[in-house]
Length: 360
Ligand code: NAD
Ligand code: DAU
Image (cartoon, rainbow, N blue to C red; front, side):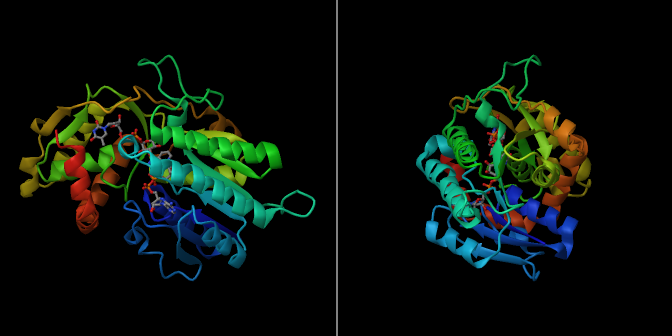
């Protein structure tokens, strides 16, 4: 039986991954979720697994060496899936330091503690022990605004935002551990995720939440930037497949083959909300395209991201399964059914963040 140390499991992708893993493996795995519960971490995301005997939550910061070493000392961890990070580009532009702290230093601590726990006296590592570092396509920088190029695993790194620079640095640390110590790891670089439990600072949940309350829908710049959207459960499945079937020391790109301009996303959300809301629901009248408001562009805004997921398909057999038209419906339905979740995460600090961020 594998024992997973999942970092950042109370966040968006981490909590979806934990749900996916219990759905797939049931009682045949153990999961230890280590999360500092920043503004982005929410134990409500894990309510339906919290009483399982094969699940444990540990509140700890990944930059805290003693706390992380203690988890390795007390649990027989043979799988690490490292999600914990500061993840929002706009916050990184306003406050880069915490991104370096968590994403770079935190990854160094995770690598060092795993190495210390798994290394044998001869410098090799315990058999079948693996570390998966979850990263982003943003490390590759920005593509031209046409279909002429894609991100491959061989694309040179060219991060632009403090967020992507910190993720690129953390990837480099993982590569350094693999090259120097033959530390058993993989890196995955994924495109934009969407789905249940996503914090409404990110485009899709922000637009859904604002539209339902008749608030302006802020579109940065000309709205023509392109992102490659992947349903979060497909990402969770890819991570598991890479860890179990991937070649050690390799990087795998994960993407949705689903490039869309931001304004298209906003229009699709408005149309889908109008289809899904019943005629007697008072919110239906609020949801109109008149809410779309072009606002000042993000500084250094990358124009286009697009992953070529050829390697993961060829070597591992993973492909995106959820069509965007289905995934966005599932997401919108989930938000309809979890109004309290949205109320809870948007109370308190979120109000201040939103007022500051969108004051213009
Ligand atoms: P998120 O912001 O929703 O969640 C991050 C989680 O990490 C939260 O639970 C938070 O409490 C925890 N955390 C933050 N700092 C911590 C610390 N110092 N110690 C312990 N826990 C800490 O992020 P997400 O969108 O779920 O992204 C997860 C990972 O996937 C990140 O590494 C991100 O770079 C990567 N990624 C995200 C996307 C995306 O579209 N969201 C795409 C590709 C890759
Ligand atoms: O590509 C993977 C990355 O995707 C992940 O590594 C990041 O953790 C994740 O946050 C995401 O980054 P983006 O910056 O692409 O996502 P975000 O949802 O913040 O923005 C998506 C696009 O929408 C981007 O071009 C900026 C634009 N946008 C965003 C917001 C929040 C707007 O036009 N208006 C908004 O209010």
